[in-house]
Image (cartoon, rainbow over all chains, first blue to last red; front, side, top):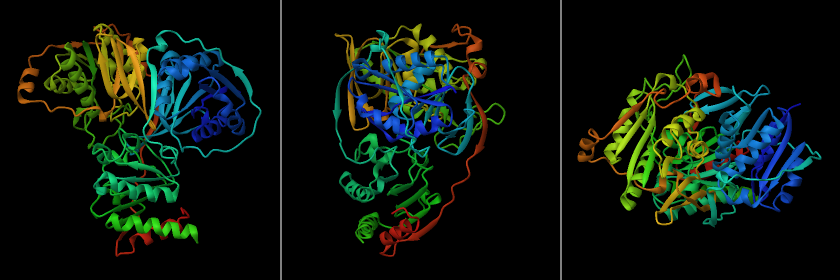
Length: 320
Length: 261
């Protein structure tokens, strides 16, 4: 059975949930090989997790170069492994960093690239929602190895404990790959909330909040639900909430079990980033807001009354 | 500073986009087409760098004949000249082929800085900056929300957007920069700018002029293919309730009934 390479998505070695999803998906396609790229000493934190989700093999590439430069080193190492292992496919998570790496790998290996797949069949036909999810296409790579960028929350992760063979990868990066040097990493907002794209529940705020400080209402509701916080472009453009939390076109695409839109009209730009959510709840005072055309439950009312009452009702149910 | 900025003409965000029934490429004929909104930020950043450090801004696009409208817009914003790569054989090129074709054109311009935007609203791949860096063998300064150019040190520093903040990334010229939309506020073309744009140099290149291999571009050269395409099942609206003072409680009841809390 051919190998399927899975690029491990992690933060300083701590694997992200999407890694388990990709390994679960890879098991349906061939023999899953995890590719761990990180700074020296970080793999130890991922080792057990990769075994738990059924990696048959782990390629371990630990190097300061990988952690210190944008794009180039990761793409070189992964492309070399593609050359050596001739895998059936390469799966990476649809994150800003990894999709760029995937693109460079496809270019280096003269392979086809498919992004934002939500499913991948055993014959490597990918399903994608395009044009903001209004059209569903299936597509196939026709040259080289299938390099597929997969959306988080597309596959339910299933454990399948294994004892992976570990292979240490020698990392020798070309000068061209070491052009963009990361000289500092600055943490601006450490929320303790789940990652937006991985969260099972997302609560987002928009123009209706009226001011940055009113996002506290959204955050409080999110915290009672263990949810991530999102924002519409109107809210991030106004500077009320960080750009990193923007949902929609030019922001992140989310697909949680539950999406609660607070004071968001639901224009096409926003809809493009959240309409594949399983259940959508909207609170908006404008009965004509487009979001009510596709929400599963819509409440026409003043969010400043509704949201605190909802937060309290959830807290009561949790306590009772 | 010799600055190249890439732009793309795309179907209007508000238009109902679809694929052409015959060849499953983006239908650009039945809709209004505009400059990809994100590219306005790229053009603005190019102009700001020129204004701060001097130099010239060249707009590069690949697209059908009418993409010249998007070139005109960039020129009327203040870019100096433009190159339009257009050829029927390029129709249907995927991101990989497009990046190879653009890189070929851009390399003849010997830029110090190549600027592109984070994504186009039609395909939403978000990969063109990384691909241009790869093709041109230049540093990848993508996801930039702030760009600082130091011509004396021949260096560019960016703030690269990260999930919980940013990474400070630096590279020596020449570089590829990819900008996100919060980086600036794109200017509107002035009347004077619109008039001046009509007289600015525009070079039109065919695939052969650009030295492109016909087998490597267009639908024939694409490394992936759409197999099937269909409209997504419409998402219908569910229960809509007017708040009578107990709205929050009602939402909680709905969530409980759906076993979501």
